[in-house]
Image (cartoon, rainbow, N blue to C red):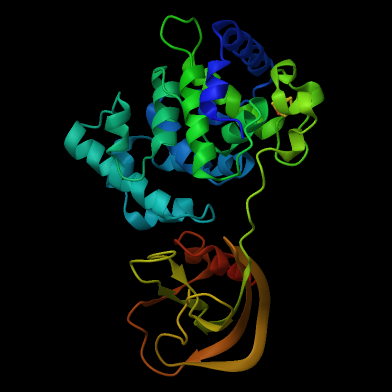
Length: 362
Ligand code: SF4
């Protein structure tokens, strides 16, 4: 195994200069024109970075534009009701990111007069902000010499420097952070740290891709250890796969006067506080329950099947059946009625949104 300290000792000033020059020239030519790249507004960059975690660029663009149009600055986000923020986020998943953004905005307004921190420690003190986001906002918005490492950067470094470490392992992350800190341009070195960080991520997203790296068109190929060894597709080393868990759900399609019955999930736990069709778990293999074993309130299912939907949440493979149902008692405590038009603006779970879309709503 190649230790990262060995690799760092090979990073002569001449090699660092060559890497920077090649990658930055490529980025200047090839960079995608993305809405968050047209600004240095720390708010816009922060929102984009939160959205981009675990989510593809193409998916994020319309969400980002909608979010910024409705909540254009930190004050607007701090004052927005949580439901509105979640509705703007609905479909992106990982809703704790949206809640943390709102809480962080409230802290920025109440404790810092709406000003954004200029230090890594200041960013890391905010809810939901980790080392990646701190490095991204500081380097891109403020041109600070701050490193960042995401999955793309880890893949590029594992190959470029021949790191025989497992994908997703703490050892690979630590090695990459150490290398990133060496490589990010310092003040006075004539390069923009934000451009460098974005160039690394762009290379990982578009050239040094997970399955089929396009080494022939890579600006770093002459410097790349994996390419020299013919092992580009093998690094980083694969991690052991998590076994998928099969989950079967029944969803109750209760309608009254053109409205659907929705219930709010508990305030804590997975998909906390989001609205969904009343749901119960029928079968699950090897997992704790994600949904209750029965519906809230007095719901009676009929035989009529309205839809079947396949859905995935992390490693859970869900098969959901929507059945027509009636409410035999009072409205459940966490329940509400919503027209299809209202559903489109409410903070629904991804599964419920998918199911209702097939019924002509949400
Ligand atoms: Fe990745 Fe290939 Fe470029 Fe090396 S040469 S950094 S493996 S795309």
